[in-house]
Length: 205
Image (cartoon, rainbow, N blue to C red; front, side, top):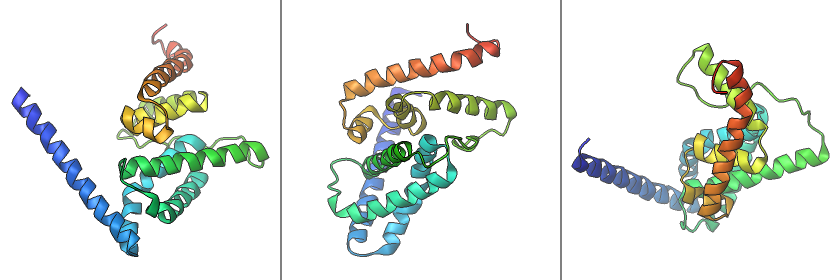
């Protein structure tokens, strides 16, 4: 693509994002005015993303579904606190992440839940149905679950959900520099966890 074409593509993307943000602000305002249909539209837009975040952290589809619903209840009751300083998606992910972390802390503390994890084959949506693709996803998810929470979250937010460094810094309330260094360490640790599997498959040694 020519430089002029790249500039045009970039401009069109920014324009679409601006229009989407404007439409979203209208929906939020409608929610504040008591329009339940507007809130349902926001739920439809973000529920699956919040569910996958919860699934990535809990490895339990039933818990992930419950957590996602609880997150949207919190979102609804907290809408008056949304000031638009960050994107709505960043704000709702911050609520979701804090809620899921609280749940996991309580779960570890009370020890009322089994440590056995569900199959993770549907944690990420896959565009390929081949056994090799499914096996690769399972291996990555197994390795991901072995990482400390602060590193696992970095991989989930950046590499799975595609948030920018700035968005992650707002969600986690850390500096962009910390995001950069922590993400680098997280990816390094993930590669270390995957190395035995890769070597077993005849990959890098």
